[in-house]
Length: 602
Image (cartoon, rainbow, N blue to C red; front, side, top):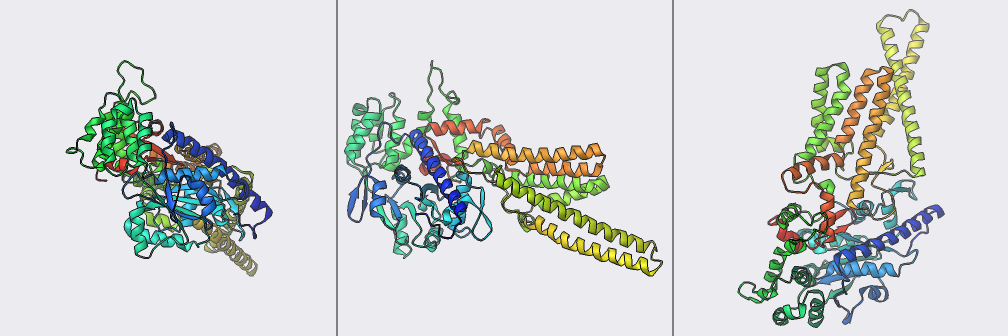
């Protein structure tokens, strides 16, 4: 429940409203995603769980009634495709169906990308929530600092993290991950899914999730599987009868295998009887691998004489397979557009060096072309070095950004700009006074005591102003602010990859246009050096953005034939066909086994 004894009434209201909007948005998102994944088409597979010696078929009501600690561990069968992720989706949907104001909002977060040794769980979760669910807007916390809505909701217990796929973390990091989750405190609500075998290894070593109720996924009922496939596969009862006979003599099929059988055999020309050949397919894993090989052909079929349905329906399946193979071969579970440049390793350094070079040239070329080229080289090389960037607290050079145009943010930025402008003016006055005093002494204008006193006062006053406000400017440049208009996003609904791209592009274009407008004003006023500086800042702002890196990488990869030119259209099309799924601002392959097959050794 909501913990708010130390919060002001206004902050409590803001957090409750944010949680209410998040709950509605997450529920709407998973309704749509469940439809795309076909989880209820035409009906869900009958799934059962076991906990404390009893069995049940609805995990949501079980969590409400039988998990007083609000800490649940869902364990799947050994091997892939046991249904843990689908269980997590159903649990989130069930909990949101009965959600009331003040309850924690269940939010499904894949643990891919979390390195427990580098990030505290709440810090990592706050970043994911801010990015995936548009919770990057900041609020003033009880200690006067500004933190994101995501962090605030986590602090007061208004988010119930559902961490999916603990077994996907590297084996040597899993104990550290469990220890980090336990350090949150056993009173923090938490739901984790993990492979049965992987968790048993942790538990045997004395590293288990504290105060967590264990719910184990049971094998599918064979009769229900046969009825389901007979309903969903054309002429399934007769075509699949020989395969059913084989499946009865083996361990119960996984949900992934059932889905593959259904999708691949929608084509009535494909004979499922070949899967009964025990020489070619000695075990269920070989059957599954064979079906994965034919999945792309099945979801991107050729329809001679028919009009293709969908923007990519006319693309040959071999081309689609090549595109998917590139996305799978990166080794990352998340298909994030702002990380598209990672396989092309020169793109990010080149953009940073180019941004630094144009900025350095703009700053120094006012005194000559040759000094400008030297400045371009120095600043460009510094911008390409992450160590120098970290010195100026520029550590996150990948994350896309958006504008927060809320009234409170605009007021805060106006106040900050006025303070910054005042500090700059006073520093300039101090520096000018020092310059005048120095030049007067050098010109021999100290003719009497009065002149000496005036110049001394000018030097002391100027030195104080330059020192006092120069330090303030340096601190502002060195540390910056965490509550500017450019943030991850505000809260409306779970963001999509396309929305995140457009938001980051708007930030890049707006910043570039602003600096170009300033350059135009200076050009009208005849201040040539200022025009060059502003133009340098404009070019650097654009080149340093995630959107610039994405654009360069997309052109390179599409030119090489590894990705389509209309990347987002293709990702959405693959998602609609069930090959991919979406988690907030990123896509993922529907299952890791599919990614492993398409991506090869990577």
